[in-house]
Length: 112
Length: 113
Image (tube, rainbow over all chains, first blue to last red; front, side):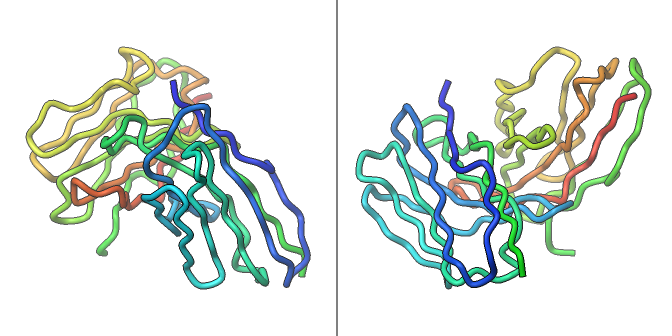
């Protein structure tokens, strides 16, 4: 079935640094979603991408839908302590469906 | 509150016992989803309800897992004869249907001893 591979699995950075993470798939996705999960909480949607090549920003976050439709990138600029958490990419398992498949997550830790 | 709520927040049970997990979706959301998240892993789709249509059960890992939903309201996920490998956080999400924005509850952490 479809699988999403995220890298890196974890990141340890200093406050103020920029962050980059990515998500790849062996299958084409027509929608890419990026979620953040805080400890003890459910994931919260950060950015949704619907078109190949699309670049979308949400504050300090920027995500891109890869032109091949098999990858996506999430960048965080000028990281702050509240950026700590696990970031997941996700996409519909089947085109047009709502059931999502998730990557394994990138755990972000920030040293103040 | 206005968000998705789940209960209990934590459940510890003995191997072989049955458990029921509850999800209250956002009012008016026709679609409801259950996912399982093992420690350090991403979310695995379990089951999907959309309005009055037959649920999509394609993600249920075994016949020990079942779920029900009454109309467009509360859903219950039942795990019978629990096994240690069932230990995980069970997350519920709801959406308006026809969109990809799923709103997640805080999850139920299940520990099977």
